[in-house]
Length: 289
Length: 249
Image (cartoon, rainbow over all chains, first blue to last red):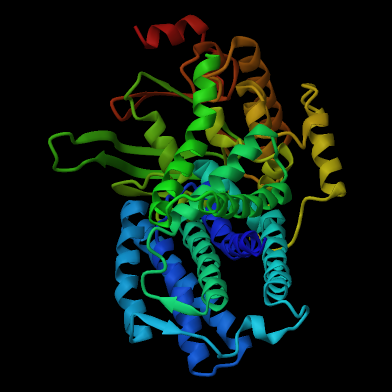
């Protein structure tokens, strides 16, 4: 059972990443793969600050700022230099590998026995239960903040930017600035996932972000499939389903390992799972036509 | 007043595919004037409208609105004066947003989009009341996504959205081109009423010569980037619909 609780916890940790991908891909319609770099950046900043005994209340803002800057850089390259968003993301992601390595000074930084988010509060004597309560509360706060933001006038303008750029420009919104802000927000959330995972697993590794974008994409695609099936238009429900998508994704991977699939095949299973989710609605559509 | 002074627009200058879309146009549009622009495809009328809107910058020349030079201002900066209805109904509204959210953005067109929640019951009732004037029965669908409406309904709502916040200039870029005749009629009549009620300065681009004849108090024929004919209110009143057809023969 603890195995599945761990998967649930990982799903919750990855939900910030999924929300970030939801913002860049579904709200702004920008395929942003800065994610791989900004996720690691979040973990790196966390590890370096924890090992330098920085107080917890400084670490999280620093992670958010670092992730935000990475996203903003992608946004600036895309909007101001008119470079394809995918390429802009690849460039920043590639550059971040060196940046992350420089900040950390080593390829792996263990955090064992150092104080972390999970040692701050002791709600339950069971470490996993304690972590669950902390991460669940943390994620709930994030979802409420993002949900509120998307309901504000600024949030409506954000949603319109990815939907009808000509309309929103005619309504007085600088779409370049909006995209930069959106990518900054998305990558700040991604970095928060790196912050959570690093502390949960007890180390930061320079390669922890490789292919991580697929987890976010898979989670968002699960959410999108459910949103379309149930014809959901509510912002709150959509965010809830993104959260559910991140958890379902991890639970499916846990189930895969539980039934005896070789762990070396996990990335292949991940890719196949995402492919199935993506293609299911299309296959159904093909049959009905 | 809109004042276009010696406006030129060249696309891809110096390239083999160079196009001189607008060739030195001088045009003054008085406050409250409803100008209709007609012309063949490639005559430069949409480029001219885009330059007024700020989505395309002129190669040379100046544009002023109410004596303020706006030549270098982007479209989102000119939204202080200008509302626009696009040819494609999908371009003027956000299909994934509710009708209410679309109207909220329109209601704060000239203001900053802040971190307050502006969509509340009071606003909802205001929007419902406004939409009910169209007589399309859309007032009870304000929570519905804009994308569920027909093109004609969306264009009619876009027109209403243009007067949700202060507006001096209304740009109508072939607003009925993608609509069936009945929807087109509703949209043009709504536009005409709003222009009169709110005393807007308006520019309509159209290929529909009946609309060009029926609406507006000034008409311009464009050809190859030049103004070929310019009829003011008095001369337009003397114009026969058949004369318009003759312009294109």
